[in-house]
Length: 288
Image 1 (tube, rainbow, N blue to C red):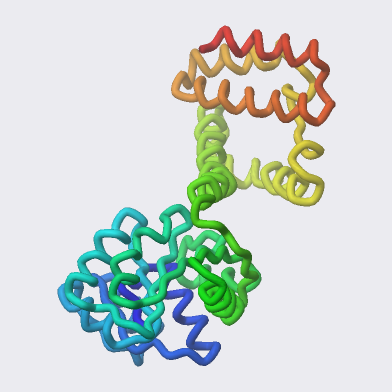
Image 2 (image 1 turned 90 degrees about the vertical axis):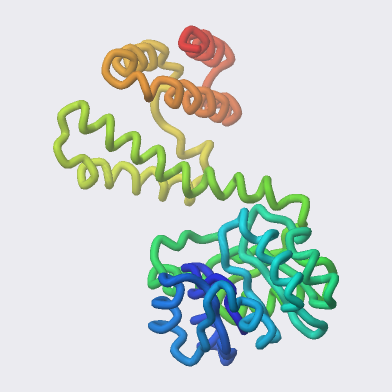
């Protein structure tokens, strides 16, 4: 196995694959990648970015562990330097990028696929710990590719599922809502709590956030939703928005957008009447 770009996800995957009996023979990347490889994959030869073709040629499994927008250019560059060959598997780790990004490798005879762990990697160590037991999306061109990807996912302790190539952008948008935007919302909550006078709000609102997320996962979003949207409490929504417009106008648009989503969810669950939904949407329309 060779890592072309030894970021947190690629390195965590390689560490777990080595524990399963695979061998990382080479890696390529910048200074941060070199430090990571030396610590966690000490038997892998390390190459500079200009020598990435040497790393790729040396392995039967090549992992392109670079940011999404760099996958296609990198694969094209490596293919131009004849870094791929028949008998190789070349994969990337993006949840949104299609397999077309690996087309140059396929033209040289390599097989292609992608793996995307449905998990966050705030640090390498956390990734190594959290990847086992996580769902892993496998995207391939044929049955053989799916089988290889599923085997790799199982070997790192993951739970593979098949994801079609056209569905990847929508799937990844869902993951962004699930994870990244959850963090963004809690970041806004921290900001507003501080404006309201709470000096150290994180420990104070932590129990509320945990209880809400746990209820959502256990009972589903429709059953777990609480607050003014479920109650059709237009007065509370108006007071919230008036306060935000005075003290945190940067939060108004976000509040309105999320209140619309909450109202839709409340109406869908049947816990908000049609009349209550109409009053709430009318109030929100005033804040466009």
